[in-house]
Image 1: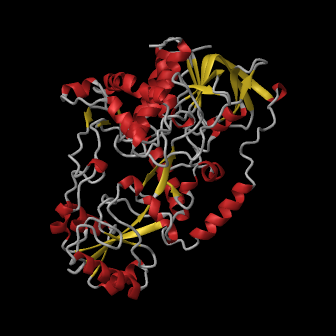
Image 2: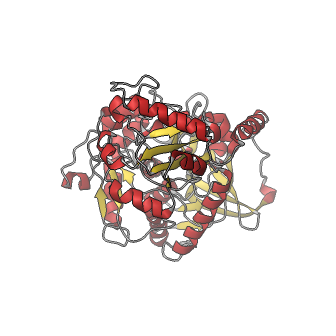
Image 3: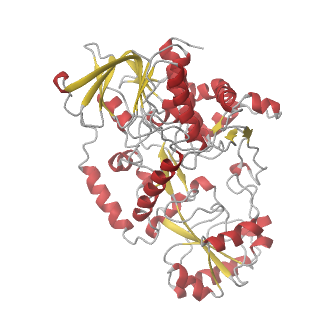
Length: 551
């Protein structure tokens, strides 16, 4: 195959366009996920009905040779150009392989602020010494329900440091660097702890507000400049081709004109098209805990489960449900983004009622919200917040927050509602005033009670603060399903497994197309940037294994 650099969206030229596209898609998502939407329960019923008629698992008719207008060939075909696909392409070129990269949309597209690693040179320079096995053990035990594959998790322990050094050494002296390791503040308890594993790019270059999108774009561009890489944008993969033994031999994709092309892979195919957060049927079937939540991914049309479904139709096995998600309040979609979701101020629903113990981890706040009207809540506090804050605890999602600056700035930006009376605040947040006032009065009684644990919901008494000093404040909070984190069953080499847990020859999966890393219902934030790290690492490992590199 001739060397061909068809990267149509450079990290510099695409900057403005990506921001516009991401922003427009986010706005369209906002319209469907508004906390003022009173039809949440109707939506749930309608969605459940559609799931009962779901046909996403049905294998489509085979695209025949007579429908193919062009045939290409390379050692490796990579489906998807996000973090996982970009790392796979760059690694494959380093290993001397030719690559065809198929991307559904017009550019490399991904999100993220950094990547998690242990044992990197940057950590060693900062005398940061953390045990990777302790971290993955924490992931498995605390929320993971021991559902992750230890051998897949072991890849992160064994190779994430090398992966971090690989990226940092490539780009530390460019517009994408320098890099830093985030060292979280000491939490107030074991539940809220985080590890110093997040490696954050601090360069000037970002795409659509994401520095990791810029790094993924750079990986693809640089690989195209260095090796035999053919990049086809606006060309989604549609079907896998298999020979009579079941080995995957290539991919049928659809070009910009709606015509089919065949991309033969002499060594292997890597599925790296992301998750399925944009596929409502799959989400409701495999991730029912997210029913009623909006989608936080800025372009849900990109991630509709394409790679997972192609793997399924080729005989692969999807990880058993329920699947894991990284459910987030920050960044917000339906409501403005503002730090402080886990601060245990009083929370009320759209009926003006308190409904839970507010002192829970950031990762679990959503679990009570989905039982409330509109799947949302309001945080309520008074003008004594600076005096109250030292007793409210510290978490990884609120570290380094200067509340004396954050709250006034949020007021200027319209991200907090303020009123001189509780009646006026109730009117602003559109809840019944009588119910809301009764809720606050009861909460104030509990604050005066001197309880170790207050009797209504069992919150630590020191974190129950009176709401009595005007003005009074409210922050709207609504969670979104940022991405889906479970996919096809894979082994440690990232080979896709069939129903008998045997590898399908010629087929690998990476990033959110792959499973077996996360368990439980939601990703815990003990390891910030782990989702991006897993994508980069699994893409790199898949390319290594196709090249025959085993260590």
